[in-house]
Amino acid sequence: MTTDFPQSSSDSVRFQVDSSPIVEVSSAALSRIDALAQASKEHETGGILVGFNIGRNIKIVEASDAGPNAQHSPIRFQRDTEYCRQFLAQSFAQNGSDYVGEWHSHVAAPGRLSLGDLGTVAKIFIDPDYDFVSFVLLLAVVRKRDSQLLVYVAERDKAQCNRLQIKLLHRGRFPEKGSPAI
Ligand SMILES: [Zn+2]
Figure 1 (cartoon, protein in one colour):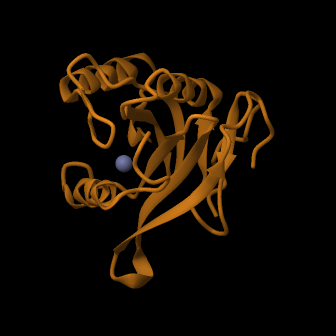
Figure 2 (cartoon, rainbow, N blue to C red):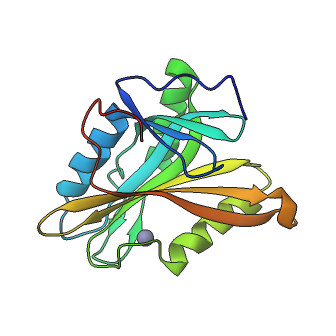
């Protein structure tokens, strides 16, 4: 177990299942994702997650929006790469936070990661420029009546020849602000 992971505070929510990495998301990031997803009920949207890798655990500080040149459709989404690159550079300059994950919404697609989404994560893990130990994927499933948050963490399984493992840590309503850690 990692012992130097910061304690959960009232302005963040923690997700962990069994011995998975801990994923801690700031309330600011959660509210932003919820608001952006709710503002785009017909088309998918998303962005990058910035924060810190602490061992295999991840602390998410902030989420970007999609950017002005993003491509949105009811079943597809491609974020504005240049915009997100600038968002990351700004976050890094402000508080040293790094690229730790991605988020996007599903409005018509099923309420789980698609094969395309899994392919995207695999590509990120293969890329030697990143060399991720773990990586977070947040999915906001937007439906007419309510929306759900799904929290996934991907990591290499050392016991299984570094095979990529993606674990679902949470599926449910967006946690209320300042709710206790899960
Ligand atoms: Zn998707």
